[in-house]
Image (tube, rainbow, N blue to C red; front, side, top):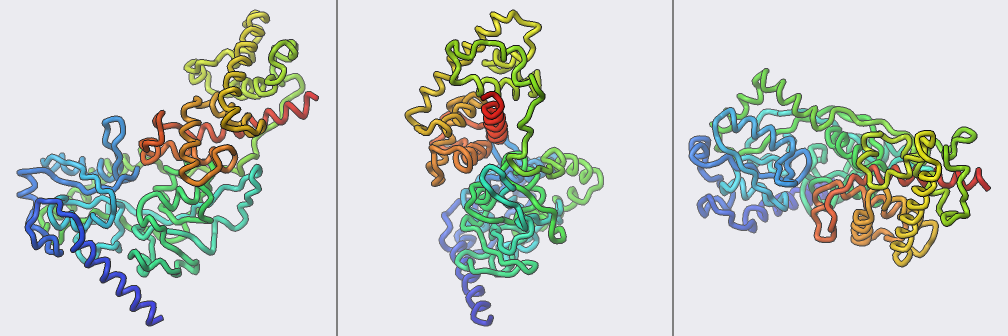
Length: 466
């Protein structure tokens, strides 16, 4: 135990010295500030300039997409800056290790990085009063009937990963190079190698980790984007989140604290936080979707068509998609370019000959998709899934997902457990902004679920129409 304590202390001292001495010169301070002495820059100097907020890209901190700046922490500070009458600017930092030297040198005035009161910088910086409290939850792969993943005791795992920058990380894991196991409420915990951000969630979503620890606030966001994940109830007491400041910026600290404590401002901030989600949705096991229909409801208005007239090979897939589309929101369907299949569910309003022509047109479209994917996905059963995905979200997004899958060491020729997981990553800026991605962001969660449902219905139609 003594040896382990000394190793942790040595790692802490080493990192503390490294981030002071090796950080790049960002300007804005004197030479001594690079050695840990904070530059003399308080609210009076900031009023003549700009409030510079050091941020790490994260949905609850800061994101810039399509020219818009969002992120809960940045938006909270925007409100405060407007109230105290100073302009504000985000300074995007690529690596969390750079936050402290940039703050001390004056390149930034506030650290917004979901800091807990106990954080890797707490011995060198000051902090505001808490702006919110968050609780730890476990994130695991969701029970999955298709892949044979059983939930079991996964929502109370004995081993989990946590970012070293998380407010829930045990003290002995807060520094790089000390990634041994530690105890958290009787569980073995490891730090994620990235040490910040959403990597623990991503690695869990890809099946690389059994479980990770994140905040309940993060879980609300990720639950909407990763249908393959499950989230536990909070398993420990809430902890406060704060903004980091230079230890000598006393006037700035008092000004921010005054706004954070103001009852009216607290009410407005609570509403802003709610806009980023307020509850974690509950999901059952994946694969447990309705795959049966009433007699004769296979595809109303279509079962009498001649299945041998040019589209026999695809008709069960057409039927599955048509049946699923019939349950979708009608307004959303109006925006689809291939809504003709859906029109078949109400044949009384259509000329049967027109409906048959639409089916043939849809069959030709699926033949084109089949030709597109045949060289890339030789297995016919797997190719069916890629065709369904391309119909749902467009071939370009599916191609992007295959590129991401290859980069993340997944199989680009298999859908379940591989490309279906990769496509969910296209909802995150760090992935849809990648040079690998040519078609921008994608609501991969919708594609994930719709393909699962289409394939389930397709298999049902095969079993019941032989």
